Length: 245
View 1: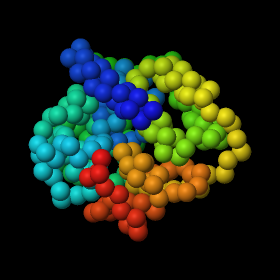
View 2: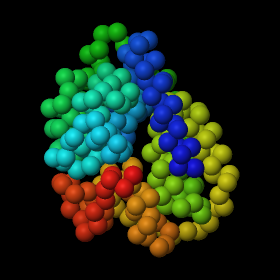
View 3: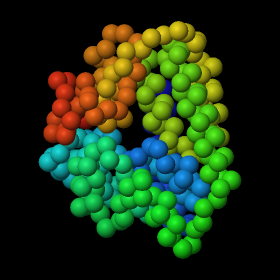
View 4: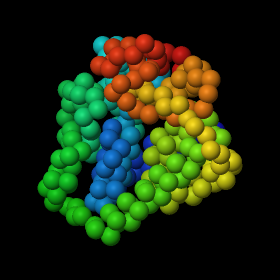
């Protein structure tokens, strides 16, 4: 299943390149709360966080945590089609170190999610579509419900988090919904009480977290983590790394 989910990201590479060539409508995001707005202006949103250490064979970056190092290395080498294709980047305030490093490493605009609507309104060749915005909000709401249903099933915590992350590389929201409905049909709904496991940027390391947990759990991204990375601005006793990937 992990390899199947990662295939969504690889397929997004091709979609992103074509979208850039056709009308430059790709947006790289670290925020996950403004996708409906991005879609309503005709853009495609893709997460840009670096997920592995392989890129360090081409560009050595080790001043920061692994997720930042990986992202900046991919940005500098232009070896990530999602980052390369992005017209601009949308960030939140979760990690200002990430935002600062990203801004110093690119000449593309860096837009905070709270400033996004005003930024989009100033792009002359695009316009807001209220109908698409509402439809996208509704579909994203259905996706949240499906993920919540899976949370109440016997699916393991690592896969649960991966599903929520990797489906974001499926640009068509209807396809996301269909895929999640299929996955939901494969698991039994149960009254499972999950332990909350807090981690910083756990996107690529849920398997490592899984090795440390012996009960049903749910991973959440948090500023008060149980798991973090070396050199992260948020501290925790348990340290994660990309080096084992």
